[in-house]
Image (cartoon, rainbow, N blue to C red; front, side, top):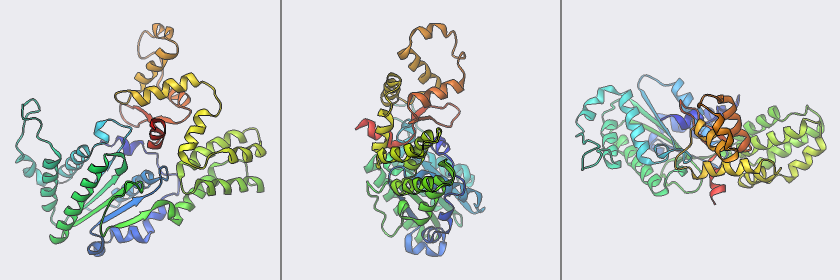
Amino acid sequence: MDTRRDTIKKAHSETCQWLLDHPTYLDWTNPEQLDQHYGFLWINGKPGAGKSNLMKFAHAHASKRRRNAEILLSFFFNARGDELEKSTISMYRALVFQLFDKAPDLQQLLDNVPFVSPHSSQGAVWTIESLCDLFSAAAARLGQRHLKCFVDALDECDEKQAQEMVDFFIALGQRARRNETQLFVCFASRPYPIVVIESGLQLTLEHQQGHGEDLAKYVQSHLRGGNGKEIEEVRKQVQEKANGVFMWAVLVVAILNNELKNGRIFAVKKRLQQIPSQLSDLFKDILNRDGENMQDLLLCLQWILFAKRPLKRKEFYYAMVSGLDPTELAECDSMDTTTDDAMDRLVLSASKGLAELTKSSMPTVQFIHESVFRKLSS
């Protein structure tokens, strides 16, 4: 249930702190402002800007500062994951589970739900409607407790379902105000598809000064080359060209650091000029740049794109081996002959850094960002 949130990389040191002092965020967390925004905040931004990192940071901070009378729920959509990570019914199931887990006094509501066996001809009991009804009934009985929800990456589920889910929460928020209970919901998504939240607050990530300062801090601390005038000019150009997209900056810094290994500052300047400014075009540039190990790359992309479900670490490794050198399979007497570290390195090298392993008890291989999947699928 927490695989997507756990896989999101931890925010870089000293980044995201600006959110906690931002007037819009402070208004959202202020109970006295609920009549103005009904408890809704929509964080939007370009693909790769860093929305999920910010949501993970905000959720972690809320968890640390949580009061006894506050219930904290979360769901992070992941279009690259399995069906349980990218459908709204899975979100409702996760939120209902978390709510009853953290409010055991509401157990009677759950006990009163008529159970239908999954093997029954009537089908399983859990539909979106039944989950919404149960969640609404539970929320109505919270009394003085506050309910705070973080829902990330709305754009990674079906557009119609996403708007219906937002409409459900808006209706829930309106009922909460009439009942004088406190509901806070923070959504994050790309600017399009447009999520209609009347009276809610909105924060566009790449327009925030604090976000720009975070990006500058990252480039300053991670782009090697010392403190000379030339490298400082390169750092400035990277910040400007990133245009608020954190993932672009992270990938480009890695590319330029590779050039800097040999002290070739002139080559760094030239390489930066050649790098596309759009994130999707940068992915294409990374894939096509050196022309090395293209068979590995093609096979890797095919497995990630077309597998019926995300492949586990060992499944991916042996799928690659079978395609690149089938004779090697005969020498693998067991699945334990190759270390996890070697398998991890194959994921990184074969994908040219555009794939990763999820952080879970059974890691699976996925692209580092939904934009990679969309670019390759288009």
